[in-house]
Amino acid sequence: MEREMEWWISMPKVELHAHLNGSIRDSTLLELAKALGEKGVILFSDVEHVIRKNDRSLNEVFKLFDLIHIITTDHTTVTRITKEVVEDFASENVIYLELRTTPKRNESIGMSKRSYMEAVVKGLRAVDAVDVNFAPHYLGEGNDICNGTTKKKIFVRLLLSIDRRETTADAMETVKLALEMRDQGVVGIDLSGNPTVGDWMTFLPALKFAREQGLSITLHCGEVEICLTSNIRTGSISSLDVHHFGDLYHAKHPLILCTDDSGIFSTSLSGEYILAASSFGLGKKEMLELGRNAIEFIFADDEIKRELREAFDSAAGTLEL
Ligand code: IMP
Image (cartoon, rainbow, N blue to C red; front, side, top):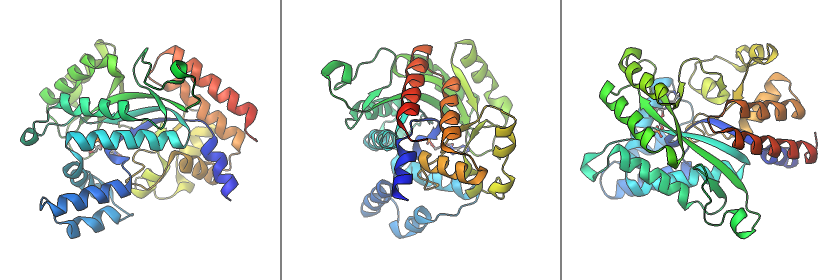
């Protein structure tokens, strides 16, 4: 059983749909909530069971996000959770991560959308367990090319999310920020948030502008990124037997397995691969191929695609299939 788990962890993986504040370790979230409880900002006993609860409806998930944002939205914490989230993905052999997050303003602590994002980038720079390549031509300290160590390497690119509760002006501010931060690993814009809130037309001007300026765009709207556990937990699909993964896979439609919110849904990308393999009767060879196909849909450049293909090909030669 353990050897089996090790196999899935050692398989290289590409994660294209992960929300920063949805991917926080439970232990970190509880620790931060406790600290805020001690400061009297929140009542820990009120939030503990909300954090620990596993089965949540879609609306409860978005209520939990509001709570998480109260707990995490200060610069030091944003830096910490970014570092931990990247380390967690790298520890299960995610070799390319597109991490999305909603830049937030919190005037009471002097936080602007820009300073929020600077705290995220600081978190990327702070990772030391693994070499992080987050910006074009970036050679991090301790990068294996520089010092000859054999540390694992992860490519990280950022997507700035527009929350469906935001205004047209907010959305435009996020797109302008993304453009200014292109040299710090920002490659695109995401539209996310509670699907029952807001109107597409509010965001159209900002999304059009983003596209005209060459940013990639991803929308929460029937996307082909498949997050099995998230779909089940939020009740958007009643059971895996009727999940559209099977039909799309057999029709050879492009599919990418992702976590969505590994913290909120207590999952991991390796776990999602195991779940897909067992639910849809797929073998390791097919799963490795499925993972490799994700490379074709990343927002980073061709040089990175080439490196990722090499990593998968080398794994195909060494992993027992
Ligand atoms: P953040 O952008 O880093 O704060 O990550 C949490 C945010 O991502 C939430 O507040 C939502 O706006 C968005 N999000 C996370 N999961 C989902 C989802 O399943 N559907 C739509 N939006 C989501």
